[in-house]
Length: 313
Image (cartoon, rainbow, N blue to C red; front, side, top):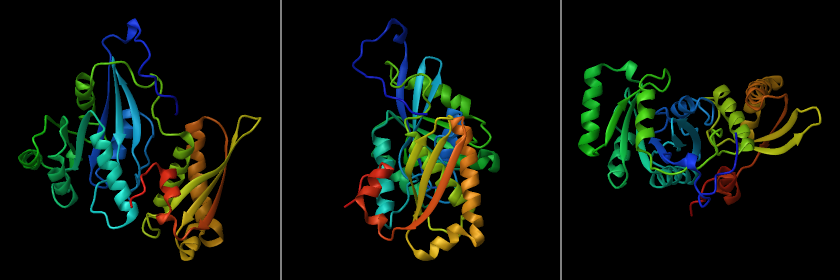
């Protein structure tokens, strides 16, 4: 899953001629489907998915090869009206990811339309001086005339270079979207090895997978501020790996919720995470989960660095 970015100063080989490579930021309101889309495009999980809003907390990059083009997708946190410090850090990361890209793609949930967070994102997107693409997601759930009205309404606010109607879940429209990106990313050498699918460290992805299972199991019962860290990673002689992870929650009352009656909940979370990690790593995984209370972690700069976020003052 991980690898080193290719040195951009290295001389181009004859084979690199005609290549293209560039960064494409996916932005949108929470639960618009960005993580589902990037996982489908890349062909493997690089970003976790749950029904809980603001699941993605930092910029996660997925890398896709199409013909002679390398497209580096940046899955950004959902953009919303921040109320807490963690909210501000996530929104700042999302807009930072957009401004650092070569192309910005706004994903809008066609069912929800342009209101609330989506409308505010459109207003702010007018200030981003980059090529912009509009993606309408979940088109299979909305009448065609309503989709056309959405396209017009969005372009009345921001003049998009191109519009694609897609289903991130079913894949319709995704190939045309990728083909278009492959033709417009900047000319130049590949920025990552051709067989690399993400620049997200595998240990952090392992923690994210456990956090995903935590949210899927306790969607309504646990605040989204729960956090998972890898505290131990032991490569064993038999080829297996032992992983120690800690689930941090902010209140003692949440500890009982995570553990569950007779430990049933934590066992279910562990089993689901271990199964996915075993498949992802291609070897046996021994996963041990611990639950600890860390009341003020949301105000601890070190925790933000662990997540790849800037600590907002």
